[in-house]
Amino acid sequence: MDVIFYGERGLVNSIILDMSSDLNKQKQFLRSIKFKDNSKRNWIENVVNFRYIIEPSFSQFGNPDLIIVAEEENKKRHVIFIEAKVCAYNDASEKLGSSLLPNSYQRVASKLNIQLALKYRFAKNYAKGQKSDGFVETDREAKNKYNDNKRALKNANVINLCKEQFGENPEFLFIALTNDNKDIMPFTDQEFLPAIGIDNWNSDKEKFGILSYEMLETNGVVNKKAGYYGQASNGFLYLPANTIAKSDDRHIKTTNMGDWDRNLYKELETIYTELKKNLVTGNVKKLDGSYSIKAGDGRTLVKLFVENNQIKIAFRNDNIPDCLATGKERVKFGVGSSERSFIIVYSITERITEEMINSIISFVEQ
Image (tube, rainbow, N blue to C red; front, side):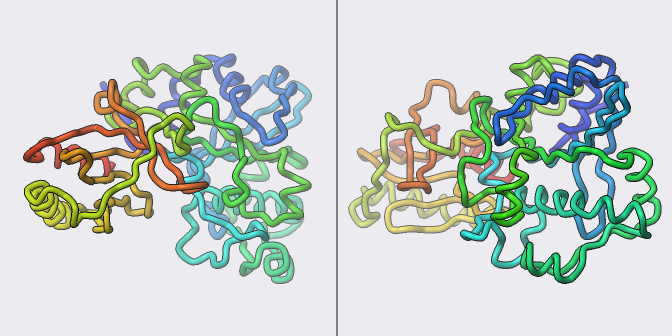
């Protein structure tokens, strides 16, 4: 029997299964995490038992993708919340203001830094829940600390699960699992920190960490060519995201469409119309010097423009299939903190083929 997992949930499940019979791989999973304070968790070496809780419902605190309970020989427990995405950390997160809180919680619950914050808020109320019928914030706590309505978890089955598995006084940790490259430094951009407020961040930032799929592959936890993870990542998880362009990448400055070769302009207008009809979650926007194709979450993933009498199609250097990226020029669009890395996948002098259109749609909708 073959079992093939798909999507973020599938990747998480495949990682668990591939390391489940190997205690050292399970420890290596935790060793691979980069914490904000760059500290090492020496207790990992003393862990004798792991428990994995997959996607339980924490009601108003959200549904964690994975909870790992690591128990030491002395019975001390460490509860690690894992929130997984297949894009880069910043791309999956909500932009925050100087208070390190969102302006509104409407329609941002799925954002990565909001998910981490909600699990942190649950943990802050865990001790209270052990003595009552649930894990419940006070109105004042939610409003003053998080600019939010109070949140609660009152489901008796989940409450009992937490008490049984977490124990009385566990350490809580909050980890983002992303498709960033293995060299990423955690939480360097103030705008995308976990949304827990300045005071909480200053006191508890060492509880937060980042882990990437490439880190797990590099450290021998999983193999992209074998096991459940190999099947789950095939055709779904591609090259690690490179959200920040390098200094030596060529900066693209597009020219006004009015100066383009008319035949190339007409070809792009035809493709623009076709993409508008066929994109499902993504959308295409016509600008002065290019067409930008955006994912459903607002990221610009593809740029179409004319340069040196050629149509250029550039894909965002973010989970891009290696078959498209290999041997192609890497460039950058945008300025300052908005500067992003792209790869010019196609250079066309006449017609854009159906195969090219399909690859654009597939990349945007993946």
